[in-house]
Amino acid sequence: MQKYLFFTIYLLVAGILSGYAQPGYQGKKLSVHTNLLLLPAITNATYNKAPGTTSLNTTKEASVDYVISRRNTMGLTYKNLRTSSLRDYSSDTQKIPTGKIFSNAIGIHYRVFKKKSGNLAPLGKYTQYGLSVMFNRAEDIKNSAADVSFNTYALSLGKGRSKILFDRVILNYGLEFSHMFTGFSKQGFTGATYYYKDDTQTMAQYRLWRHSLMNIKIGIGFLAI
Image (tube, rainbow, N blue to C red):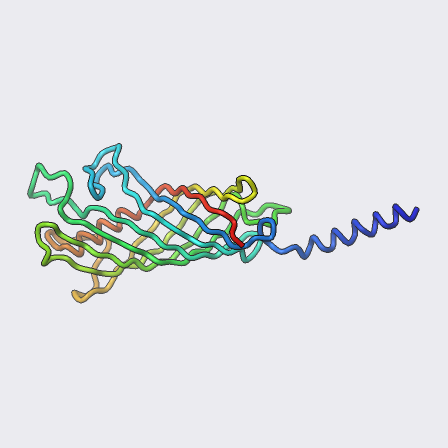
């Protein structure tokens, strides 16, 4: 009889303590990730390749995420990309533009995972909301006097899935949509969704806007702390 009593008490205590379990995967809340955003460069050249179905525009990303609840994480993101500006249509033979763009971005993001009963760790399907500032530089190989640095800002929405492999490795994949907002430079405010012919900054900014509109996102990470 005592064995059954002790067993019953054990089950009750275990049930109560499980209600106070901390969110995370095996007690770990911090994770580090490296991601790649990519899309075929069908209409715009990459940094060193002409447009085509086999050319890819890419963005490299590193991020850190921290679990704040069973369904939510917050994180910091760093992105780096380089690509070509718009093509100079005055030259019919030019396939790779002489204008080049370099961009580094720092941002924050918030993930909401789909509710799953009994799941302590935020895993599975998620929606990600992000905000970032982009530090950009446009250069023209033919005319260095036209080189310009400028900042832009972006709001992003991501849809994806997160999985745990081997109890430590995290696999992420999905889509990311981003809309770039106007930035400020010595020349004043500039538009992201339009450009002026032969204007290095607006052409570069329009190109970045198109580059960021939609990307396939794949990544891998690991549980740190």
